[in-house]
Each structure stands twice: as C-alpha cells, then as structure tokens.
Length: 151
Image: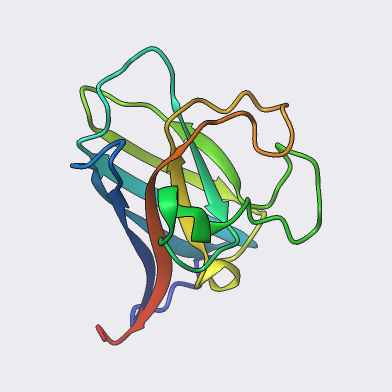
C-alpha cells in the first residue's frame, strides 16, 4: 500500500549544463511498498536517437563544480559493483528532445535519497564498466529535496 503523505513532496528540479543548456526537468519520488516509485519528465534533451541517456542517483549533495563534480559518484551505500549500485536507474530515451519515465525500485526509499543528486549523463550506460557504466559526462543535475506543506 502506498504510504505517500499528501503534506510532503520529495522531488528534484533538473537543469542542464553547457552540454544541454536548455534541458529542464523534474523527478518525483513516491514511497510505494518497500521502495520508491520514481517519475521523471525532461524537456529539451539532445535529439540524438542513437543511444539512451544514463540516469543515476549520485551521493553528492550539490549540483556545483565543473561538470557537476560536487554531485560525486553513484549512490552506493552497500558498496556493490555497477550496475547494482542503489542509485542505478533505467536509462532515459530522448523522443525528439522529450523524455518521460515512471519506474519502481526497491533499492531505496524516497527519504533515503533526500539531499542526494540525480544526474543525467551524456552517454549510455553499458551496465558493466566499473565504476559507472562508461556513461560519459554529466549533462544535467538536480538536488533531491523534501517540501512539507508546500514550503
């Protein structure tokens, strides 16, 4: 049963860097069963249809530094090999610059990732190269925040 509290919301506002300067998006995280329902919508992605774009929760707490360096590496509290990091999510596909995805994960609850960052990489995740799937540069970032009663 969904334990979503209507007085609180956990989400990230996502913005691109110089690799995708017009990219904008939002990610919402809802408690569901023993994990999280992740909903993400992104506009103005590169229109390249040759590959999907890697999507990960990172352990850093800021979208600052050159190429979002302060977002640090993948969120991986149990020290697993890639792609079994807690923060590894399915990739996004650009559909003429637009992407929408909803996915369930039992790897974390929304509360566990508040303060972390969500990253969209410029490349595809190959799901085996260590430590991050050879997914390329970080092109978009958002800090996961909790808002209570709209504040």
